[in-house]
Length: 489
Image (cartoon, rainbow, N blue to C red; front, side, top):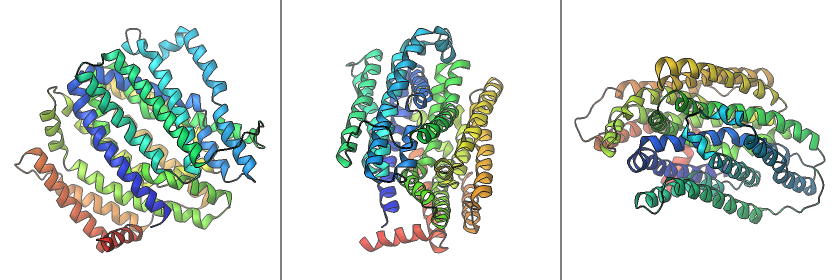
C-alpha cells in the first residue's frame, strides 16, 4: 500500500472515530448537559476564534509546505522552520494589545448584549494555540508524518470535550471553569505536537533569515488574506446566527452542519498527505504527476464521499428521530433542510480533489486572494439577506451559493493555467450512481426503531454502492485497496 493510501487510511480511521465521538458531543452531551443556549455560546466563541486564527499564523504554515521542498539545502530548510515559529510572535503581541485597547473592535465581533464578549480571553487563547498547532503540524506534513498530528487535530479535542462535559455534569466544573479547562486542553495539545515535531525533525538554529524571506513574506501575505477570508466563510454563518437569532439556533445549526460535515472525512484525510506531494510536483515542474494527483484524488474522493452523502441523506428522518429520543430539547428537526444543502456543498468540494492545493502551491496563488475576498464579501451579504429572510436555514443557502460559484471559478482557473481538470467519464458514472441510489432510497421508510432503520438502510445502500462501484471498476485504487484487504483475511 502506497504512502498516500496507507496514511489516508489511518487518518480516515482517526477522523471516523473523531466524528463518532464528536457526534455524541454535539448531538447528545452538549445539548443534554449544557443546554442549547450554552452549547450555542461555546460554538459562537470557537467560531470567532477560528476567524481570528489566520491573523495570528499569517499563513506561515502553508509557506512551510510550499517552500520546504524548494529549499536548496538543509540550512535553508531549518531557517524556514525556525522562521515559521518566530514570525507569528510579531503579529500576536501587537494584535492582542490592539484588541484590548480599542472597544470598537469588540463591537465588531459582538453585539452589545452578547454574553460572548465576556469570554474574549478564550477566543484569543484558543486562536493562538491553534495557530501554532497548525505550524508544527505543517512540520510533520512535509516529513510525510501525518498520522499522529491528524490524531491530535481530530480525535484529541473531541476526547477532551467529552471529559470536560463529564466533569461539568458531575459538578466538578462550573461554566467558567469549563472554559478555562478548555484553554488548558488546547495548550496541552500544542505541547504534544511540538515535542513530536522536534522528535521527527529538530532544526538547527542559525540565527538568520531564510534566503528567500521576501518571497515567503509575500506568499504569507496572500495566503493570510486568503485564509482569513476562508475562515470568515466557514464560521461566519454561526457567528451571524448568534447575532440575528437566539443562541439555541446556533446549537440547532451546529448539529445539522456536523451531520453534513461527515462527508468531508475522506477529503480531510487524503489532502493532508497529498498537499506536500502537490508542492513537490509543482517545484519539479512535473505536470504529468500533477494531473495524476488531481484526477485520482478527485475520483476517489467523489466515490467515497458520495457513499457517505447517500447514507446520510436517505436516513435524515430517522437520524432526527434518534436525536429527539436522545435529547429532552426539541427543535433540532428544524435544521433538517440544512443537511441536504450543506451535503451538496461538501460533495462538490470533495470532487475537486487536490485542486485547491494546486492553486495554493503554484505561482497562481494570488488568484485565491481575489476569490476568497470576493467570496467572503458575498457570504456576508447573502448571510445577512438570507438569515433575516429564511432564518438559520438561510445560512446554509448562502454557503451553498458561495461555495458552488467560487469552486466553479477555481476549476476554470486551473484548466486555463495548467490545462488540466479534475473530472473524467468515470466521474459522471459515480455521480449517476450517487443520484440513482439517493432517489431510490430517500422515500423508503421502515416501520422500525430509528436506530435499526438507519442501520439496515445504511447496510443495504453500502452493499449496493460498493458492489456496483467494485464490479464496474470505477476506481482502480479503491479496488486494489479492497483486494489487499481481502487477501489479508
